[in-house]
Length: 55
Image (cartoon, rainbow, N blue to C red; front, top):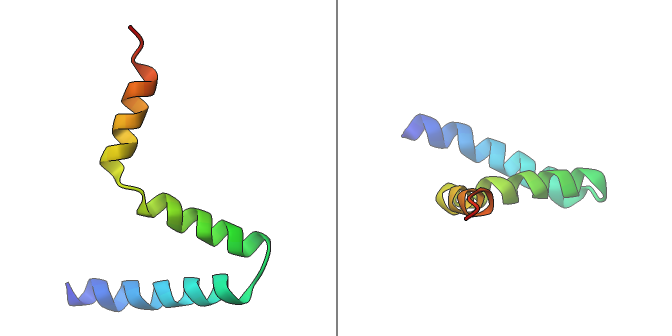
């Protein structure tokens, strides 16, 4: 668990700094990826199933 933190924290800090100090495409790209990764997987799976299943 400690190794995971030692890897995740610097990556998160670098992405946050990059997104905070730049405007335009880089900010939108980093924010979009982070928003996508933060969305709960189970809700995404349920939404896809509901959208694909037709009666």
